[in-house]
Image (cartoon, rainbow, N blue to C red; front, side):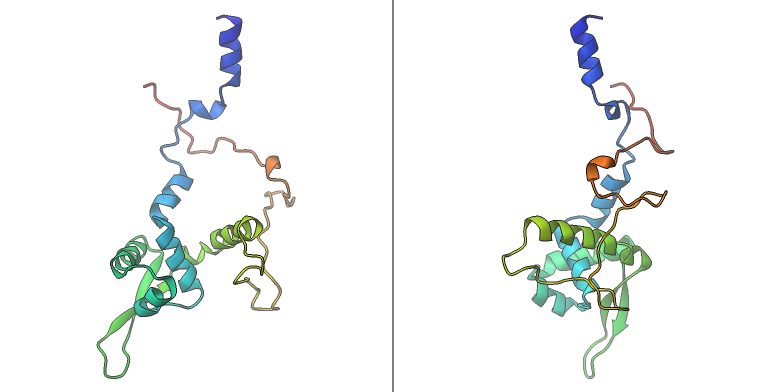
Amino acid sequence: MTGDDVRAEAAKPPALDWSAENCTIQRAVEEIGDKWSLIVIREIFQGVRRFDDLTVRTAIPRQVLTSRLRGLVDTGILRRVPYREPGQRARSEYRLTQKGLDLYPVLIAFQAWGNRYLVDPDGPPIEFEHRGCGEPVELVVRCAGGHEVTQMRDVAGRLGPGARRRSAS
């Protein structure tokens, strides 16, 4: 092996030796689907749960909204709850399952990033607050040892129990 080969091998990220086929980040993105699904989840967190209200609030085309709601129900993020307005046919509104509620930190993280880089001069259109005291909610990154991580460069990936070596191709 030449000196150039050794330097090239040393510069190669170790992650290249490991498969990303079972990556849970990729699976989560695939399950949520696209931006419209995330917008639907955002609205349902805000109490907008009925199809017609979702079309008004989001301007998502009806066919797209139908597809996204079906997908979110099929993956177990939402559940249908029947309701009937007087004199109307029975319909469904959409509620978050526990799996869906567990996406709240994801939305808070997206919002915090958007507030940092994409917010209008007037400020964000919505803020999250703790219902118990009314104070703003902040997302905190903390290691299992209890240390708050304030610099994301202090976080590193490491192999987990599901790591698989890449097969030679």
